[in-house]
Image (cartoon, rainbow, N blue to C red; front, side, top):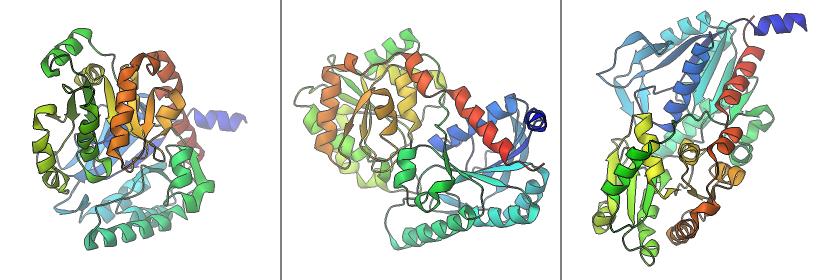
Length: 391
C-alpha cells in the first residue's frame, strides 16, 4: 500500500494523441485542451501530438499554456482526416519518451499507434468521443469500415477505454464489443459566469420585438441537423412570430456540403436567422449562452455535447434530441426537455414547452457544477493514467 501511495505522488510523462488541436475548434479539441492544460498545471509532463492543419501554425514543437505541442506535417486532407507522412517515425520516438498514452478517437492512425506502442512497451488509454458517422457516399462508407477495423485492432490491446457516459457506451457500435473495458468519465466543462451588461447588449442587438432567442452552438454539419432547428420555426412561429435563431459556430465547412445543401432553407427563413461564426473567447461564449432563452441541440448523433453543460452553467435551459449519450445531461440535471430525433415538429413543440415555463428547467450553477465537476473529471483521468503507466 505504501509503495502504491508513493508511486501516485510521482508525476507522469503523458502523451496525448489526436488529429486536431487548438486553435482548431470543436468539442473534442476543447475537451483535450482543458484536460491537457490541467494535467500540466498539476505538474505532469504533457505532450500533445496533432496535425499541423494550417499553414499559420508552427510546424514542429512549441509550448502552449504549459503543454508541449508537437505538430506534424499534414499536406493531404481526406474528408475530415489528414495524411501525415512523418507520423510513424515521430510517434515511435514520442512513445518511447512517455509513461502512458491517451489517444482520442476516432483517429485514422489508431492501429498504427497501437502497434508501435506494443513494441515500445507503453499502454494506451483511448478516450472515445463518438462512433464515426460520415455523410453516406461510397468513399465515406469505405473510410468508415477501415476506421472501425483499425479501432478494433487497438481496442483488443488496451487495458481500458474511457467513455463519456454509460448511455452512449451501451448503444455504441464501437464500444459494445468491448463494454467490459469501458470506464466512464464525464467531460470536462469550464466556462466563466456571464457578464450581465454583455448579455443585455447581445439581447438588445439580436431580439426583434421582444421575441425569444433560440441558440444553436456547434458546426453546421449533417449529424448535428441544424436544418431541423430551422424547419422547427414553422412550429415556433405559431406562438412567437418574432423568434430568432442565433447560430454560434462554423457553418461553411470544407469537408461537408451541409451548408450548401440547405441554402434554400436558409434563404427562406433568412429574416429569423443570425450567424455569428465561431466564438473563440470563453467570456463571449458565456454571454452568448446567457443571452439565449433556450439552447437547442437537434443532433441525430452526438456522444455528449459539451455545449449543453456550458449553457446550463450560464443559466440557459436545453432542448436536446432523445439520443444515446446526448440525452444524459438533460436527464441528470432536469435542466431541459427531450425531443424526438429527426422530427422538426417535435423539436419545435419541445422548444415552445421550455419557452412557456423556463423557470421550471433552470437550475443553480452550483447544482450543475456538482454533477459535472471539472476537478473530479481530471482526478479520474489521473487515477486511470497512473494505474496503467509504465513503471
